[in-house]
Image (cartoon, rainbow, N blue to C red; front, side, top):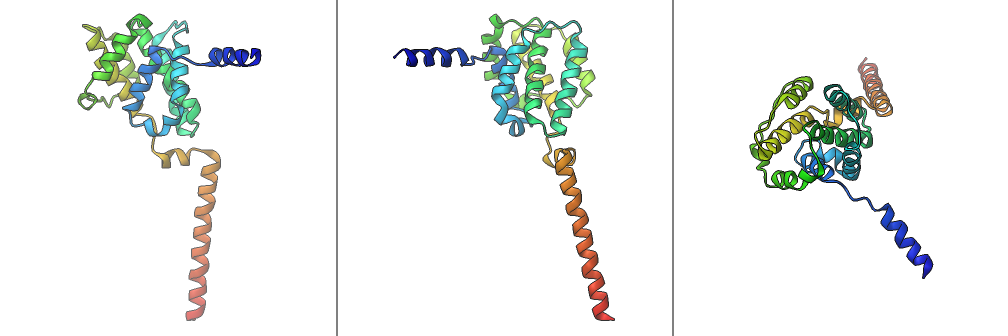
Length: 201
């Protein structure tokens, strides 16, 4: 009985309860084009977003750009678990840059859950411009903040290299296998061409 109680205490201590920021990050991720690639890592996104709320950030612009670049490079090299960590951190730090607190979390999450995601118009600007816009933007109210957050977050996620073929070409071992297979195809084709020429001669 004591052992069972001890196990329950350990399980309860290890149970992760995501913050509202983590839930918001996952909600945004769900509506992004990178969701399929990062869906298995939603827990990582939530955990990273929750932990990011504790970070002290001196320069929001440089920090957000750094996490975006880390997410980009991780996805490009098919390190999706790391990418999920960086995406979760990025999305939470974007909120934190606007003075986000968990007290507002439930309201913001509710607004984002009711948002018509199809109406969110994405920007095709460079990440630097998107982040500059986010940092300089003054929301009129919480609903306005929710919409612009969704817009900027989705625009940033849209720029991540989610195409599996592109990721394949930047993953070292897979790239080598791909190159070897192409070389083998060329050699095999050349062999059959030479064989056919000899037969016709």
